[in-house]
Length: 376
Figure: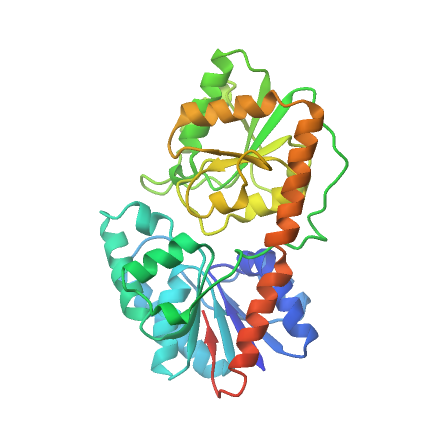
């Protein structure tokens, strides 16, 4: 079969869907990677994919630009004639579904998380996106969700027929790549937050919690790894980040293609996000036997068994977040090591990438006799 995988960046396909690609190639399928061009486009070709560039403006909701994107997808589907198309993230999901429906191609969607669309419901762009979800999701034959909360919300809002839904554990994690190393506690306890620098990831709560811990005399390092995104009111301005760095509140590590190198040096990985699908960074950290702290919100909460492999904190509550971080620093070496070991066990039990691959393999086999299939 000819299987197309469509996302908002080649980087995303290469880093988060490579295991799926390799499984398809191993079974003799042809894989088409469809995304905007970046340096990872060549990497996709090197592992055996056909690459077909389709430009996309990831941010914003310009109707004309979005319609042009849908037209480009339509033309690409028509030209490449895939038997199966796997699409992820909001714009490929919505506009890819509409493009596929015009070609009378069955569709299976993957909702990777709801994020700003459902966190900031009063924004015009959010209202438009929800309307488009409701319209476009009349067409899929199946929809994958990454957590039960998102699935339940779509059913409650009547966006999707419940019979067409299924759950996958995020993108899954390649356990052999993100391995647990020997336990080694830093002399100065080190927290690491890996996220795009947007407010919805809990960046402000992280900084406020750091201030509270500093005031209590907690001797720890607080690191931040992720891309700066100065997007209207959603992203942290670089000037603000520079101020935090100058004040000694946080160590900014920039961006990295090798997050394992950063995770292994941390004692605890945190994510005070407002909402997620299933956060890949927490899966990576869990797989590497790191204790976790995250908010008790959809997406984050299923990665932590509270008090077992980490701690859950309240949403947008810097004091509670600081308390959980303080609690983590007070664990002795054995307690910290055991908590990390529980993270690895949970990753092996619930988030193995093989579980995700199997879901997609089963779906493809189920529809294998159909002339056209699109998995979004």
